[in-house]
Image 1 (cartoon, rainbow, N blue to C red):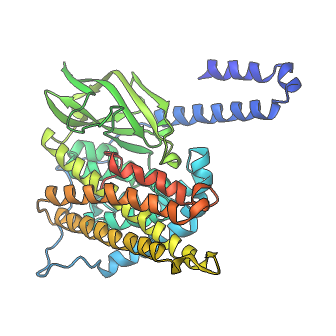
Image 2: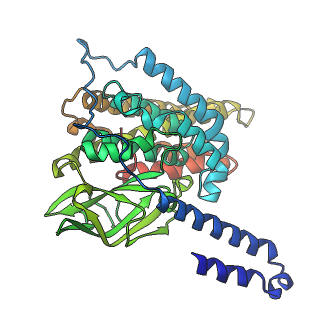
Image 3: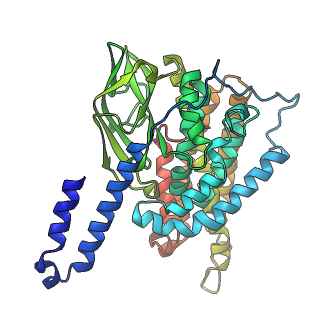
Length: 428
């Protein structure tokens, strides 16, 4: 890092820079290079260690099953949902355009999101968290509310919570004692759950990243893609194939052989996505998270998270186009008076309710400890197809305004495409 900054500083001091009128640009390059370098160095410097000895792993119990099938949120869930919605509308939505342009979420906003306590929602009270019982439904409501502000920023804010949730669900007593206290402290670590790989038609059950058993540990090789905030991350949970079966591994950013490469994408640009390269990364035997049997549950819980993100963003589209078509006048009357426009808006509302119901149903089964694989598959298919259609319709209903960044519809369209192929990152 020091050598790179030295070269950049020498280049920035050339007299030719002033002659070409590039002084301001060169200073910006130097500033961002230094900032990124120190962020990466700071992330690698944190040392995770146990602050207490646990006799057994702390788990959250399954939620109590109601006698009647009812997906209505409880009073506590509704209050939490409204609180997160206020945060999303007041802080995420106004910052979304600049964050999308900069490919980075503002630090102040990330700190504010951490202060909401999202990372500790799924952590048991005995470990310093706020969780009393396993509630995938609560996580779904929070994720949906965050995405209503902006999906890219929501992913950036929620990524660390996926790691803390995974540690609670599948971590043993030593892993929980070493890592979970950091998430309940004053400054929670930047962390990410990395399943996605740079493959066409990526299959999470056909991983190319491999883990090989060695004396006293494992050796990881491969590449993970679209990992949020990877450049500043301090902790990863990485999926790799072990003995022919997918498994999850805890990897600290300070591990030798781990490298990060920026990977800005079509959507989710505010999440600062990047590739994580693993070249002969040596891990101790204690790095294996849970058993290989937990991987399928991880995939399905992550897919529910993406369904929630799609529902929240689709709701944002609907809430934006209704006043627009009512106020936009063409040929002497609001465009909503046109039957084709009115039907298009109605279809968004219809499909959105179907997406929400399917997602909530799967989440309610997950939190009660019932099988939710089939319900998750249905929700995933519905949210992938209809979410992209809603994004496209939102752009179409705005006409020329849907094509420019002055209106958020084009950004929502780009973000909603992610719901159909992304794996991991979020966990409910």
